[in-house]
Amino acid sequence: MISICGVSKWYGPTRVLDDCSTEVAKGDVVVVCGPSGSGKSTLIKCVNGLEAVQRGEVIVDGVVVTAPKTDLNRLRARVGMVFQHFELFPHLSVADNLTLGQIKVLGRSRDEAIARGLKMLDRVGLAAHRDKFPAQLSGGQQQRVAIARALSMDPVCMLFDEPTSALDPEMISEVLDVMVALAEEGMTMMCVTHEMGFARRVADRVIFMDQGRIVEDCAKESFFGAPRSERAQQFLAKILQH
Amino acid sequence: MNYHWNWHIFAQQVQGGSETYADWLAAGLGWTLACALCAWLIALALGTLAGALRTTGNRVLAGAGATWVELFRNVPLLVQMFLWFFVVPELLPRELSLWVKQDMPAKEFVTATLCLGLFTSARIAEQVRAGIQALPRGQREAALALGLTTLQCYSHILLPRALRIIIAPLTSEFMNTFKNSSVAFAIGLMELTFQARQMQEDSEQGIETYLAVTLLYFLCAIIANRAMALIEARTRVPGTPG
Ligand SMILES: Nc1ncnc2c1ncn2[C@@H]1O[C@H](COP(=O)(O)OP(=O)(O)OP(=O)(O)O)[C@@H](O)[C@H]1O
Ligand SMILES: [Mg+2]
Image 1: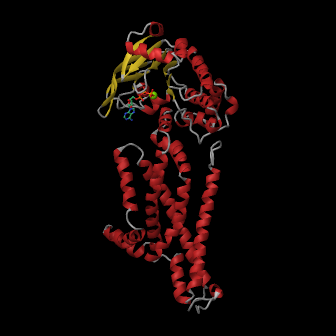
Image 2: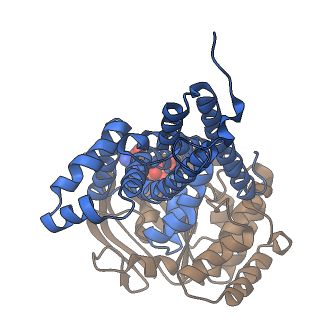
Image 3: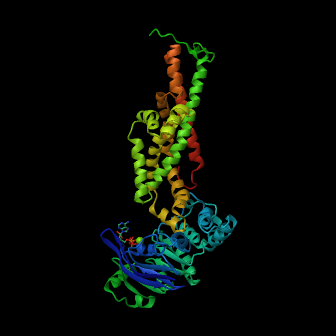
């Protein structure tokens, strides 16, 4: 479903992605972790072309994202993305947040978009909040609306960039529950997260990044069993302490 | 001070004419309102465009926006009036130049409105740019990630948010437009200031004249202010402080 081949990216002289390669098969859940600044966000944003790469190739569902002629808007409409800071549109009601993309990008009618959006809203347990505005919701609720917004577009895969790291501890689980349910239904997911409980529960593979490189890319069992690199061991020891 | 006060002067007929001085001022007020309101529409449209261009991240577009701003904000408004009125027509192709100089209807009005609109647009562009730059970077990414085009991202997300942020400086700018329109008297637009000078010379009641005109400008500015406050209240996003 997602294939990243030999991707490198520079910001001026600094190399933020260094020859990264990995695959996410249909229905798989891959967790990406690593220290701050290691390039996790950059890597995941390459998947839907939010970040351009200077070298290598990214292919999503048969579409070559990195080819200059690719219609990126069309591709992005099929790839859901959830951000660390939710990024709901605060001047639009929850319902309008859910329908904007469906109407403007997918060309759905308003009724169709509302029906689909409300179904997704119901799925994240927030159907009662359709007429509220983002500022009237808690962080956890906002992130669930953001997930519903992405799902309303009927994506073929979902990208998550630290979806719980801006949340208070008591709200993390309500978001993780939604993600676990999604994973169990067979959604293809690439998740940047440090929630190792989530990784243990639903991940098929874990990728560990450091200094722009994919240092470790292995099945969940072997990652948690005995990561091969010393860097990953240190990292795991640090975050599992909490 | 042995000034001869005469507050009835406004009801008196002008020398060698059938209108009253109040008619003169009313006509002047009409041109002032027409000029300021039309200039405001031009300024809002072009200023929003130029300001948005500067934030696109595209060098050519950003350069075009920056050039626009520097062109119109670095020359005094009065000088710009003279440039548009006396210089620009000379630079046009022969046929057009002749038409502008001899046949263009409402020449002073068109010139003054255009000039004031362009001058104000440079100031609005800077405010719009600041407003867009104040938004979190993730908003643009979230809009693009849904598949919205750059144009849709600006029209549905970035500009509606940025314009709300800058409503206070925009209000000042709207009020300035009425006040600045007084400069148009210099190229012969028979707006309020022009009529005031004419009334002063004709009636020799300068104090009453200018007090009345001051009051009229003051009222224009207050009404502009109230109108913007109404728009601000109407567009306030629920759940946000205001
Ligand atoms: N616009 C930019 N210009 C220059 N350098 C950048 C830019 N964006 C990111 N970087 C650099 O690229 C590197 C990777 O950044 P990235 O955001 O992908 O890291 P990350 O692993 O997601 O970190 P975090 O856990 O803090 O989110 C960092 O060193 C960062 O400083
Ligand atoms: Mg990041």
